[in-house]
Amino acid sequence: MKIASWNVNSLKVRLPQVLAWLEQARPDIVGLQETKLTDENFPAEALAEAGYQSVHSGQKTYNGVAVLAREPITGVVTDIPGFADHQRRVLAATIGDTRFINLYVPNGKAVGDEKYDYKLAWLSHLREWLAAEQERHPRLAVVGDFNIAPEDRDVHDPEAWRERILCSTPEREALQALTGLGLRDSFRCFDQPEGTFSWWDYRMNNFRRNRGLRIDLILTAPALTERLTASYVDREPRAWERPSDHAPVVAEFTV
Image 1 (cartoon, rainbow, N blue to C red):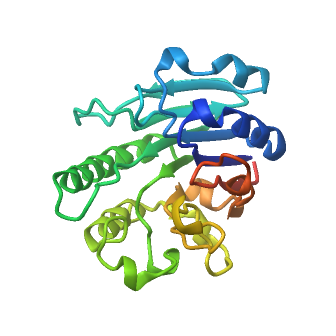
Image 2: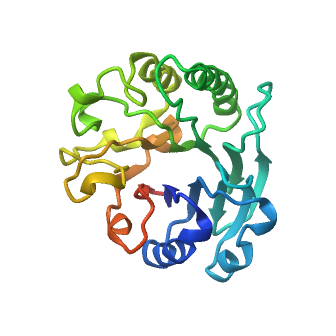
């Protein structure tokens, strides 16, 4: 089984790249973030022709999350229970015996901003929900753009980013509260090349210079972690024409 996560930064713009990558990589389940589409404009037919069933929770211009799968999708949830939020950032679904939760975590804008406080509150409610989800679904995968670099080694210049948004201590502690549930950062279950990132700002040739952050994650509960065989960032689509500023992240498992 191969699962993936990709912030596509507008599915309307990036649909050709997504379809090309699906054909090349052949994942079984995919979480997309920042689709920036309303549900009525979501390209379900094109994805079906590519062999994927899909569900989408979107809004105009901003946010938006989708789950694509080769098998039937059931048990769809589009909000963190008990947390009122009009932003389309959460999409949970069951595919086979795997519970797949796709997240687009708020950016937070800047440390101390009201959007930063919202981000921390959002993550706190997320933790409560994931604890309950893991009790119900042992084969749990939580994927997405977390907008948090877990450690300094996930940052091209740790000193330049010290205590800035995406790298502040409270954000990292909130992420550690999720992994404290027993969820593992699948990428760190293996030896990895230094300087592996999943997001590079479009400006200043940052991708070419590999000045990036690893903020796209696949977290797995023990029942999936024990079946992990690989976890990696697929940099190739970031080098394609008109790319997203993120690359897909992938985890592979024995069935």
